[in-house]
Length: 380
Image (cartoon, rainbow, N blue to C red):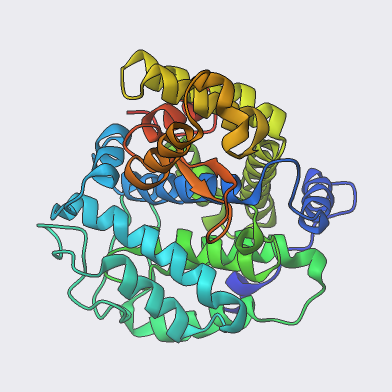
């Protein structure tokens, strides 16, 4: 049992050490750029939805991205078990963002994550819930597409105590990333719950990234599922290498995880560059909405000004309504704020506005633009 919780120490000349150095640089880099925080927060919410959907899709949920987006635009919440499974993941991410900095990662916290992940879901074979939410298993389990046989349920508590001790071990910060990768494998190897282990371990990985100061809760976007859902067979292949228990296999698993993290951080951090976001995501999104007659020509013109300037006021769009009274300009802005929710004040009672795209008119276009530019790993 002790061997599984041994921290791997890479050689100085290894690729893994290079990845650790690169990622540590990204960790220390303060998130921020030319994109307005309000705009970036909206993007973060979209990526949280994508993370939640991706994590459920790995487990066999067949909800497509298009179907899930439509449920987010409906007035009445969906009662579907498939949608509930995805929404549970979204709520778990928010729970972690709100509490992880001040909460220890212990057995109670891990069980709380599991309880949230399977909440309200029917247990197998009808659904993706669990007969004992938030409690370690009391029977044997198997792992699909894996030769590994998890330890007997009588050993689960001891192994989970070992995992928690490993996670909280006092080691130099340079080992944080290796701990994250190894803890993910160790959890899967133990398979402590009857069902929902995959979703729970991805949320544990997310929690550890926040805990180890990757600033995900302070403005950075990072979704571990993007690493694990692009190629499920590859994920299982590298897990199997780590299952071997030999140092080479553990090193290969850690390289796989850290390479994925580096690529995701580097890619998504580009959205801080507003010139990139404007030209590649937002402008194509409103063009998409105009072409499908989801917005009017005047709304398109107003939004185009909002995209160019980020923050606008009534005088910025006077030229669109040449010859019209100022009251008409104000009416148009009020309509976009209150009825269509395509603009929002930058603060309470402010007369300056910024684009809002979490609505029925623009969200589909933003999602399409993100997909066209390689930010969405999911394939419907």
